[in-house]
Amino acid sequence: MVDIKQIYAPVETEFDEFRTRYSQLFSCPNPAVDVLLKFLSRRNGKLMRPMLVLLVSKCYGTVPESAYHLAAAVELLHQGSLIHDDVVDESDKRRGRRSANAAFDNRIAVLLGDYVVSMALREIAATNDLRSVDSLSRLIGTLSEGEINQLNALNYPSLSEDTYFDIISKKTAVLFQCCTSLSALLSGASESDAAAFNHFGKVAGLCFQIMDDILDYHDSAETGKPSGNDLKEGKFTLPAIYALTHSNRDWSDHIKAVRSLSATPEQIRDITDYTLSNGGIDYALAKMEELKKQAITGLPAFISNELRSSFECYLELITNRSK
Image (cartoon, rainbow, N blue to C red; front, side):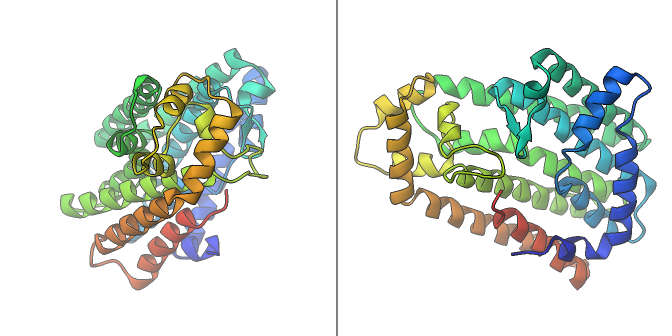
């Protein structure tokens, strides 16, 4: 198991500084809003995206003030999008605790998500970098496009790996790309180095989502979600897509039932069991390993061994986590 301290060792001071700054953002003179922000502040995860911003920036020496604002912006945008996702998916759990929509209601949750996104916009404006403002603005649209594409996929009668990767590229990977490419540019990187870091971010995001989808095939004590939750929401992810499209059995009725959100528990279990016993998980794991190799070999050559090791450990943490 990767020790997260191995990852942020080169930026330990900067990461501590970021956490202090970030925690101070979750207050508001309006008591009604302050209660909501305090609720959200207790749900911070590992801060994987800000950590990535700081690691990339550290490759160029001293981490500039603008990188701290970028790190806050991407994490706030991530938090806001999760709140909205939980409303769309009607989820009542987030990181093992009640989601905002379960703790309050959908109306409050949507407004809280909007408020947090507005916080992200203020932070990105504080970078005083128009490229960053433009990129984050476009990112918000891309995240929404990914969600729309995922919902639209409920109407598709067949399964497609290309469609799956298009969705997760827009829903998940693009946020990691923003972390790496913008951090590099704000820290003085050349366009070619920024492109290399952009690729690393994309691969990290793809691996993160693939691992999430693999974990859905196992009951989670952390999130409280049983296995097969994606299928119950009409989502076919990489393990099932591979297993079912490489099967001689006709799965069209099962696919139609899942897509229409009318699948029975038996149909969900049938797909889950078949995926587990017919190479779906192994294929997804192999795809992650292939992507990881691409990411590491594509990093700029000038990076120190310590930082290169941190990037490698970062990918290991993403692809070997249990929650």
